[in-house]
Image: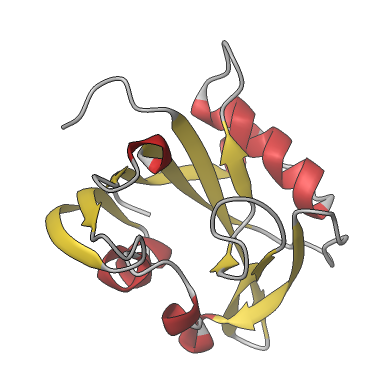
Length: 166
C-alpha cells in the first residue's frame, strides 16, 4: 500500500434493460486518459471524502443525481507511474445500481449505456481487464498497478479480491 497519493473516484452506474445489465461509459474528452473509455469520476477536492466526490463528479459529468446510499464501494486501486510520478494516484471505485435515465453530455465525457458483456476493455486503461469485470459483479478489489514506461501498459499487479456481498 502506498501512502499520500492524490485521490480520485470513479462510478460505474448500472441499470437493467430487458434483463440485461448496462453500464454507463464514455470517451474521456480532456486531461489524463483523454481518448480512453471511462466511467464518470475525477479528483477528490480538498476536504472531500470519496462518496461526496463520487456524487459531485457524476452530477458534473453526466447530470445524474445520486444518493450516498446508492453507492457501493468495489475497489481501492493504486496506480503507480514510475516514469511519470505526477500521474500516480489512488482511486476509489463504486458501482451504483438503479433506474438511471439518459446521461447529459459534458466537456469531460459524452457517455452512453453499454451492455455489461460488451464493455470495451481494450479501449480502457490497461488495468481494467484485471479488475473491472469482477467489480461490476459486486466483488471488492484492492489492487496496486504499476504502469510501464509507455504510460499505458500494466507491468506489475498486486491484486486482492474479496466478496463484499452485493
